[in-house]
Image 1: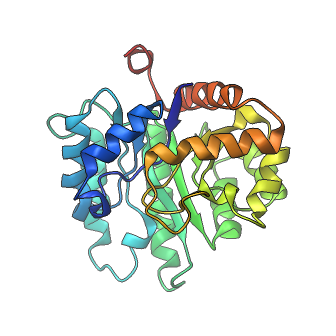
Image 2: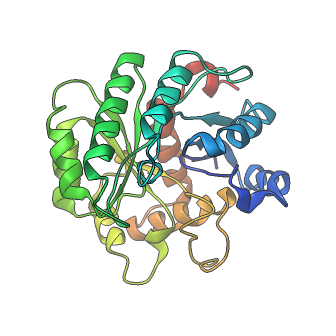
Length: 269
């Protein structure tokens, strides 16, 4: 079995005490790649350091998270830093696998919706300029996200909607708006999980696996800190929902993630 965790925050402070041991557990669990989304400048150094330590397995993204715009009068400076890093990665970072994580998050407040939307659009434009996929975060903002994405129909936007959590109708429309895949994580394992019903209907080839660790921990570890090794439980749950062998789910989702995020040189390592 070969797995890819397409959304791991293993550089987060939650792992400061045992980051390398946690990483080793992921490797032991057949997780061959961790794709590492950026948040903002407060965590860039930790992300860069972690990816430099494991350049063959940990491939970073660069972007500005929507909640880092809320109540932040310097958010445009943060966005300018994203542009700077996309143009010239820092020493020891060979490349980015995506522009991410970016998007809209209106859960905490709608006061910064206009600013979040401006940053989201700018970063989509950057993804097109650099030929990179996007990794999109959406929370309490599916209608607003669809409105943004409709304006990019036919422009070649591609990427993954991380932690997809909306309806089949939203899924179908997004598939018409660009070359998109859908990240499925720990929530698919929860009782009364709405996304589980959507996953039953999604073609397997349009799904990628993720943890979003340290968040959204799957059963049987729900209530604990999440980690990349637990992507295996997500794989097994999807296999159960679809009546497939977990090895088939692993092989298909890994191939999808490779096509979206990786280069042949990455895949050969």
